[in-house]
Length: 492
Image (cartoon, rainbow, N blue to C red; front, side, top):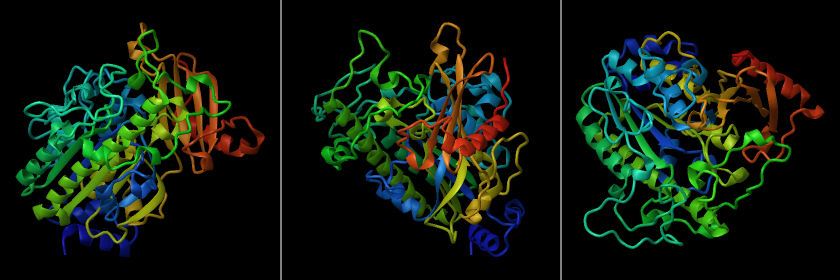
């Protein structure tokens, strides 16, 4: 019986046993296959979605699925930096895409660097750290070899094949809303786009490192825009049968809760093109096509792990860096505190686990992944980590390790592109078992300028802001205290 199977059996039979001590006595050490998707809300079949995700479905059957997993900020660089350092955005002082975390915390130990320092071979294939805008390209010191296809722009991810490209098949043709072609459907191989090449390289690297303890991070670029998956993935869906869109804003919501969707539609101004109803349908179709394309590439990596001979001692983590809007609330992209942006898919697969295929309602935050993986692999916990280990939940999915999850986002959403380079307001949000509550606080004074509260049964649609209503007074008081405890109100 392999080491991980022994661990799970012992944990199941003897609640409270310490995972690090058990792993310290076991050999060989478990590997980690860490897989991240970009702009991926829980739009997959095991979460009840119409998305076509057969490979994620089979991963779900061997995993504990977290129903309530949340990012710390819904935009790439702050979310990934928080996850990979185990520190919240306010601790890092990082809330934008243009600042590399090492500019602020030059000596911080990242998740892969911690594994590297403990004797693991650490490899990066694809987008793990933020991919552009920043002065540093990725984080070379975290890895045992150079990163692969980790630093570029999503707008550069156009079809690359030998010979002449086939005609574009997306209805309406190739269009530019911003600086990228948002919708394309070309009959090209998977490897024409980044994720096909990421999957191929991940398969190759897995064969290279399988003989040693490894931490292999695979970062897929999809389902992030542009919506340009190969044609066969568009063809999986009937556009007219996709879930209908409700674009309405929640009633009584403050204006500050929203943003201008510039990532997809372009900045407001005379050059901006508002999508027609037909184009809205096409972009939503494209997001689902991107998901199916991502799923197929994930399947190639899972197949390679099965062939490798080390699957029975490899922990698999799959996670999205943050959620996404595809027209809901009138929004496109991320950068809000709404449930669509804050909530992410999260799977932990432990070989031999008796809880494979189960889901848990226990809250999880992305900041928890660092301490969880350290504990599961028997590594010391670095000082200063702000997350909690989810290992007790993997031991027993009924276990609750935290009572809430926290997400935040500044206004303006991309404040670093403004003249003063400072947020004007920060939105702090807490998701409890019953509500999502958000306070928008003036950045300099700490004064609350707006509040939102949405009942849990109304998520993710969040159709009505009921902050201040008497019937939610108790829930709001609880949420306010949690928010104040996590983010003490103070002037700057």
